[in-house]
Image 1 (cartoon, one colour):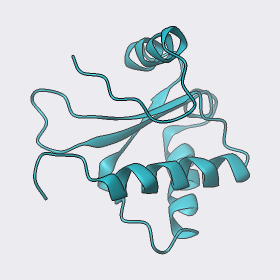
Image 2: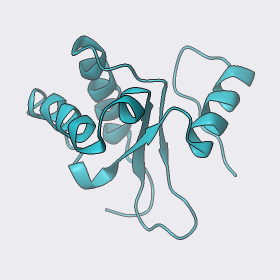
Image 3: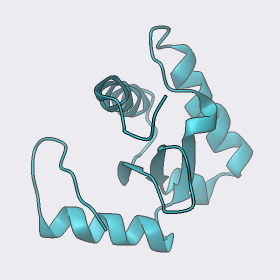
Length: 109
């Protein structure tokens, strides 16, 4: 896969977030990001669940949601969990709140 985020990954990310919501996992914000030093896009999922529970428990919950979606093309290696008070998560929530939309929005820098 090249450096561009595939449309299928966007849809798969939405499906995973919806499944997490059905499973009762609170998601504060979710976004795809590729930082300068990273070669691959990562789906960042920020949640108070990642702060309240141990990270291994939060990861198990996300992996269980992935297992419920057999056609999804996101791998566990493409997922980064953040606490909802993480600096990057807070920045993403602030950006989302400044530019509210009902569908995915692309931001650079």
